[in-house]
Length: 494
Ligand code: FB9
Image 1 (cartoon, protein in one colour):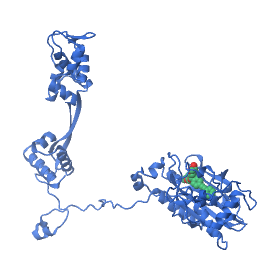
Image 2 (cartoon, protein in one colour):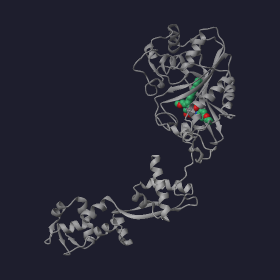
Image 3 (tube, protein in one colour):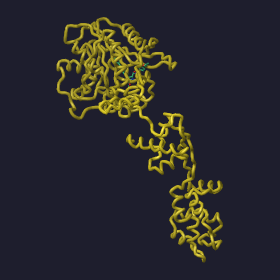
Image 4 (cartoon, helix red, strand yellow):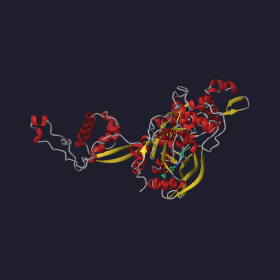
C-alpha cells in the first residue's frame, strides 16, 4: 500500500471528523471517498493507536445469494420454470424433461409437487393449479435488495443453498482524546533538506525506540543433522580418533563387501538392497595381490578359516555401487594401514550411505552412518564394551545393554541398547563387533592385531533430540525449512 494512499485516507478521516461527530460506517465512508475498505480500516486502526480517533468495531450480517440463487432470481425458480413449461393440457414426462435443464427439472419436480402445483403421473405431467406465484424468486430479489425477509423463508432458502450469510466487519469512528484535523507526523530523521529549509526548528522528532527490534539478520542455518554431526565429531576427536576420508559415495563391491569377507551370494549384495551403478558399472583399479588373497579366503579359507567354499567371481567384485555402509571406508583404511609398519589407530567416519530400502517414518534410501574403530594388538571384546560405554556415555547414554548379533564381517557381534529415560524403554542405539580375521589377515595386518568397531546412524539421535517424528521432515525433498531455521542447538550427553 503506497504511503500517499494511507496519508490521503488519514487526512480524509481527520478532515471529515472536523465537521462531523462520527463516521457511522467505515465501509460507506470508504465507498463514498473511493478508498478500499481495508485501507480505511488499517488507517483507522493506526489513528486509534495514536488516540487521534476513537474507533468502535461494528459487525453486520446480511444474506447474499449464491450463484444458484442469483440464477433463479434472474430466470425464476426451478419449480416455477417447470410449472411454466407444462401446457394446460399437460405433457409427457420425457417431453417436459427435454424442455428443461436436468438440474432444474430434478429440483423443479420436487418443489412443484411439494407446492401441489403439478400432478406427476407415471408418464404424464399435468397442472393442478392454473396460476402459481414464484415466491422463491421474489424472496431472492428482496434479499438481493436488502429488504427484510422472515426467518422461516430465510431458513428455507438457506436449506436450498440459494443464500448464504455474509458477515461484514468495520468501524464507527469518533474524535479521539488526541484528535487533530491533521496528524503532526513526527519526523523520523533529520535530513539535509530539513537543515537547508531550516524547517527542522518546527519539526517534532519521533522518540527513539531503543527497544525496537532491528531488522532480523537472515543468516545461514545449520541443519540439525550437521549440528549433531559436529557434536559426535567432537566426541570422537576428544577420544583421540582420526576422521576417515569418506568423500566417495561410489564404491566398488570389492571394498564394500568382498574385503569385509561378505560372500558374493549374500542377500545384501543384490539390487533389492543395494544401488548398483550402470555407468561406470565396474571399478578400474584394485590391488591385484590383495584381491588374490580375498578370492582365496572366500573360496577356500586360510588362517584356520575354512572360508565359504564357493566360486568367487572377479566381475562381481568389480561392480560399482553406492556404498551401503561407511565400513567400506574402514576396509580401505585398514588395508592402507596394513601396507605400512603396524601402528595402532583409532578411526571414525560420519557420512552418507545408501540402501535400496522401503521409505517409511524412520527410513530413507540414504542415511548418515557413524562408525568408530580401534585397531591395536590384543584388543578384546571387553575393550569394545569399554569403549562403547565411554562413547555412548558422552552421548548421554550411560545405561547400556548388549545383545549378541550377526554381521558377515564381525565375530562376535553385538547390538547395543540404551535405556531412554524419556521413552521409559530400551532403545537400539547401534551395532558393533570385532572384525573377522578372514577380513584382517588377507590385508596383511599382523596376527595379534584386533580391530573393534561399532556403528549407528546420525538420523536416529537427531530425530530423538529434536523430537522429530518423521524422518522425511528432517532430511530429503520434503524437509520443513522452518524446522531448520527454528531449531535450537540440542546439547547431546552431559
Ligand atoms: O542409530 C541407531 N539407533 C539410535 C542411535 C542413537 C540414538 O540416540 C538417541 C538420542 C538417544 C537413538 C537410536 N540404530 C542404528 C539402531 C536402529 O535405529 C536401527 O533400526 C537402524 N539402524 C540403521 C541401519 O538400518 C538398516 C541404525 C543404523 C545403523 C545400524 C548399524 C550400523 C550403523 C548404522 C553399524 C555397524 C557396524 C557394526 C560392526 C562394525 C562396524 C559397523
